Length: 151
Image 1 (cartoon, rainbow, N blue to C red):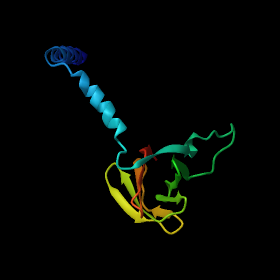
Image 2 (cartoon, one colour):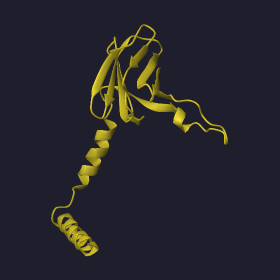
Image 3 (cartoon, rainbow, N blue to C red):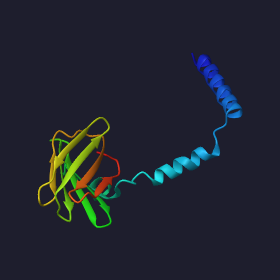
Image 4 (tube, rainbow, N blue to C red):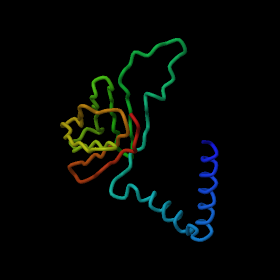
């Protein structure tokens, strides 16, 4: 069986080399990809991860009883704090400074929307572990997106 694998790997390597020689990737492809990355937040400010409770050091010999994960994102003038409890599936959060907004929760397979209250608080139910991102649409038209994070 391993002889077939070795033959397959050799054939794949020869094909790859042949394609690289006959049709090399233009150097501009990398440049365009880099430029697109800088435009990833052209329609919104990008809130970067500023705190993640997973990164906290727990003293040796101490067991953590916390089940919820707390995460903060920040961008100039705004903070988005979320807390996810994997046991209940509840993801609750707040926007600060306090403001009414429409919050979209993006997962790898779906999108959910809720409105915050006057204090900027919001809640999603049945949020499973996996990749998520939030998009916050404020009443004045400003939009903030968070980076993707794995719960």
